[in-house]
Length: 199
Image 1 (tube, rainbow, N blue to C red):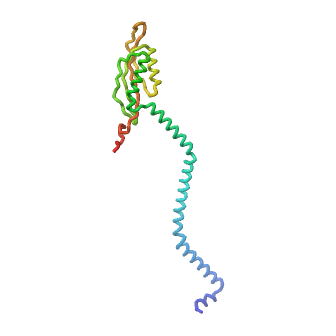
Image 2 (cartoon, rainbow, N blue to C red):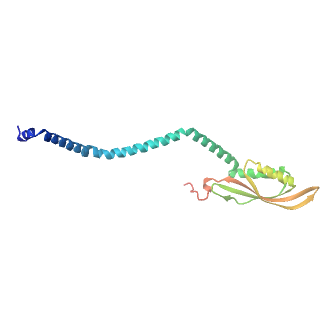
Image 3 (cartoon, rainbow, N blue to C red):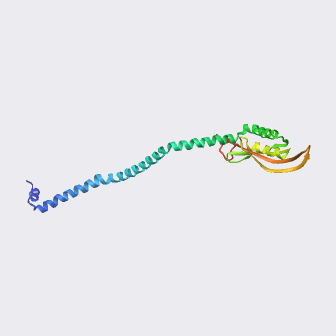
C-alpha cells in the first residue's frame, strides 16, 4: 500500500472526519462557482422576465375582461360620430344647406335682401362658413325663420343680429333684420392646416 494511504488510515477519527468535511466543503465550493453562481444571474433575469410577462398577461386579461364594455363605448363613439357627421356637412352639401336656409326664410314669409356667403375660416378639422343675411318681414316671421334654422339637421348659428328700418306697411309692422348665419363643415385631410399632404 501507498505510504500516504497508510498515514491516512492511521489518523485519529477526528482528523479523518475533518478531512472528509474539508473535502465536502471543497466540492461544494467547486459546485457553487462552477455551476450554481453562473446560473444564479440567469435565474434572476428569468425571474424578472417572468414577473414582467405575468404583469403583461394580467393587463391583457383585464382588457379582455373589459372587452364588452370597450365595444359598447366604441359603438357609442361611432354613433356620436355619425350624428356629428350629419350635423357638419362636407363641401358638396354646403349649397344644399344654404338653399335650405333660404327656403326656411321664404316659408316664414320673409323677403331676402342680402344673402352673401363669405370666405370660409378653416380651424383644426372643420371650417366655419359664414353668410351675411338681410331679410325683411314681421317680427313673427323673423322669429319663425330663426326657429326653422335652429331646427335644421345641420348646425347653423345665427349671430350679430340687428334690427333696422322698422316701419308699418299695409297694416303690418315690418322690420329689416341683418344677421350672420354660420354653419360648419368637415375639412378633408388635404385642407387641414399644417396637415402633411399625401405623397
